[in-house]
Length: 166
Image (cartoon, rainbow, N blue to C red):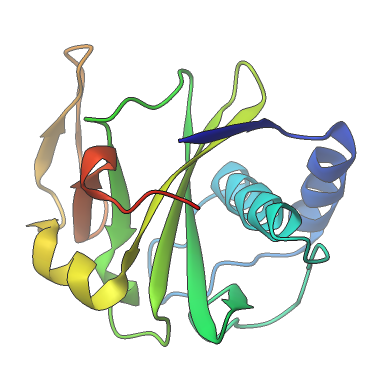
């Protein structure tokens, strides 16, 4: 996994943007302001890593965030209070399954250390086949013994089952 510090400037730009713009465009489960903020930070950290400019586009993105080497990439970011481990899972909301993208690129932000980890990537077609699917309302369990019910149908895959970021 690649681990990088998140610049304070990017954090400020993303927070200023999401507090005035709802960037959730699904019919349900669009994420709250913090989740949208983390997603925008993750997307722009990936852009920065590949020497692309930050983007704060309004409106529906069509299902992908970045085009790189001719591939449409959807960056998925999870916020955590710890660094990700190989067995930690990444979520993909099933409502996005039919949107136009080729690659799912997973990142994890440690909210305490302000570091981002690029966990890995998957071709979306492979991901849908390999990931575990959970219906809305399914109970999920964490390492620390806590549990939660899914608020949307989703797919999960562990970091260990993703392709490494090059």
